Image 1 (cartoon, one colour):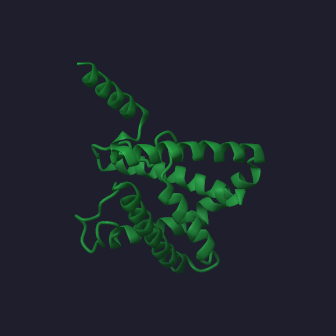
Image 2 (cartoon, rainbow, N blue to C red):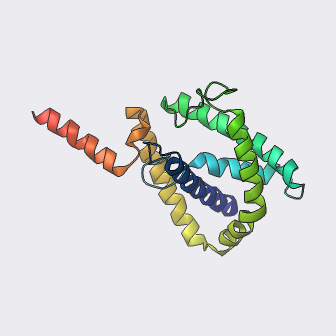
Length: 186
């Protein structure tokens, strides 16, 4: 169980880094792209890659793995988006401007990207992720569980209350708290 948890965290962090790189590359005004208040994680990447590792045959050829990975990642992406939308009334991404999208949740362009990226990850990154998962001591995994659980509670409470993904940074929460505090004392 801790093996899959470490892989989830590893790929969630890698996804966060990929999001930062993508935001920088397209010069997005929205540079903070994560899904937790405190931890630099994008769980859709962690869930998608653990699903790919569990479901897609790693021994298959690169393009077969890319096809399976693209389909698995897109399925996970659709379900995660649906969960965020229904549970918290928020959208972390919106593919509506892209051709062929399904309700803004998924689109063929990113299905292709996820397929190639997941196949590359299985071939090039997974051996290092396996080493990390085997190396991490059980006390560290336990500590990571506690940190993630606490952040999930804080993030969930904030999203349920505010329905605003832009608040998912300590700076934004502090600024919002100050603004509310100042307006109530005026």
